[in-house]
Length: 262
Image (tube, rainbow, N blue to C red):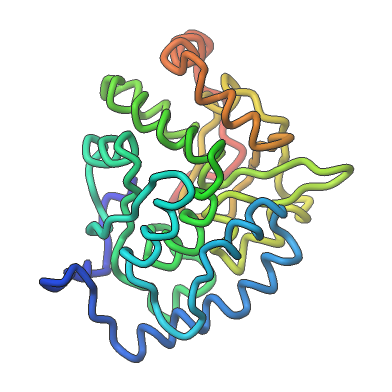
């Protein structure tokens, strides 16, 4: 999780809604309209169909209650606005209760391509559509419960599982790849890179391999993991994740595939 931010959280009013400025709504529009076309080219059909189910507006930032109404109909999930930075306890508690925490601010124009911390565009456009898929939603809930049960050291290992699935996961399709991770589908810079760039490794998903693989949040990813279908995520939700962490710890971390952060 990010350690600091230059952004300020937006506070909901008495009615639970957040008042965004005209410029903030304009940033949303300038993000979502071109990203819809990139999604059609690079995202998996499961994500595209889920995005259509939410029917997000193009001209304004939707309120969390609007998105929650759609999610409740499909999987019983809700979206709750939070500051950009919340601790692991709160993060896992919310996920285990089928509540997705959504950072309430929207990025500035200089960060349009990719922001290394979550904003409302990343949360709503990236994360919430697939929460209408019962298999994906079951995995995220199970992840939250596993995080609540884990100790502090184990949570650091567990974070890699979330990163390489929910945030930066790929689907292997035929002789190529499609994207579903929220960090990819919400990034104009990464969405094409993730499936096409020869600079990145693409490995078949293996939970132990994932738990042992380091990552950085401030660069285009150097490693991605691919699943064959969301059925694999549902099966992952049934696994003994604590046991997987023990096995990964016994093997130790893999060497990074990126340079050291400045």
